[in-house]
Image 1 (cartoon, protein in one colour):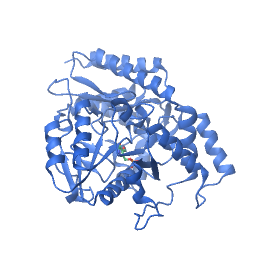
Image 2 (image 1 turned 120 degrees about the vertical axis):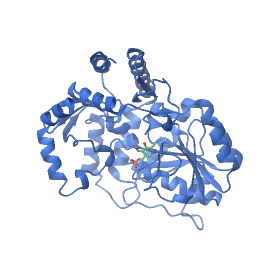
Image 3 (image 1 turned 45 degrees about the vertical axis):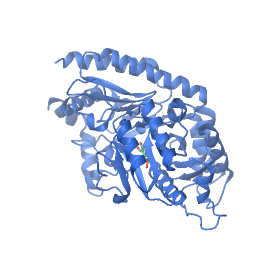
Image 4 (image 1 turned 45 degrees about the horizontal axis):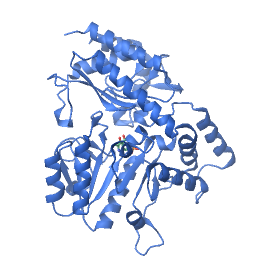
Length: 420
Ligand code: PLP
């Protein structure tokens, strides 16, 4: 309560702006995930790995736009590409451009895809991947996993889809990291068109799929002829060729989004030629896939510049090694506490486990101390670190190691203050 009172006092202007926003937006909000109680802090601008709010505080940004903000808020090459596109190409031209061809070719090469289609978001990428799989197989059901998040209308908090999930009857929900349950659900259900899974569940935050489990998912999908769709909307930044390269998976279709648009709205799905061909308009009876901004010039230019010039394979390897180092440091300093930091590379989740069990295999295993997590969030903000209330972190490229060490020191201070 004391931390909350300090928060309200410190963020007076945000409170005023929130009240103003609530006159035209439900709850003053247009992305439910960004709503925080008692009200969200309003952001004014960002530079590099810093953001500044409307109350005049500047933070080190560890939210990293939930992994999409990999390049930070002012990467010079991306800024230049955007300005050049605005001046010399134009906004949407309403036709096909070479900007999309070169971005498609680069992504296909990096992620070993035969063919790719662009969308406006990761949600749409999953939607079209699923529709394509249904058409390709002539089947209808999709196996997904507890705790899975594949977009606002594809959420699976437990053994039923969320209320706002589309196609309620089409889902078969298996337990994440449970080999036997998964094998059964995929191999013994009728009419399975696809298996859709994240290699690390972002919503957990960051529940890592075990190696053997992920390979069993792939094997079972292959065995029954279901399309194996790997959702790499978040995880594509974890290695030069994404999480699939890290763990040796070969999905039939990969869905992508977030950082690959260089900070502009983006999504993509791609993979096996025979499956993607259902979207080829030269084929009789092809599936439609449209979207006014699918090939928007800004996303195509910023995404390509980022992937070709900034987030090269070497940078990706080095950057994620730094993330692993941070997670290791955090788990070292929290060893004898109920805190556990999960994740891979530069994406991680801080958990406050009630039962003190230092392991998290499934979304359903999370018995978290919500009060402590909230206190942590308030206090990290007071110390100048912008993190999500639910405890997920995504490091921004160019964040110096010393800054991350400062974060570790703040976590240590938090532990000293609230020991027991
Ligand atoms: N899939 C995963 C794993 C995600 O984390 C997200 C977004 O957080 C999505 C899909 C949806 O992407 P978008 O928000 O671009 O629709």
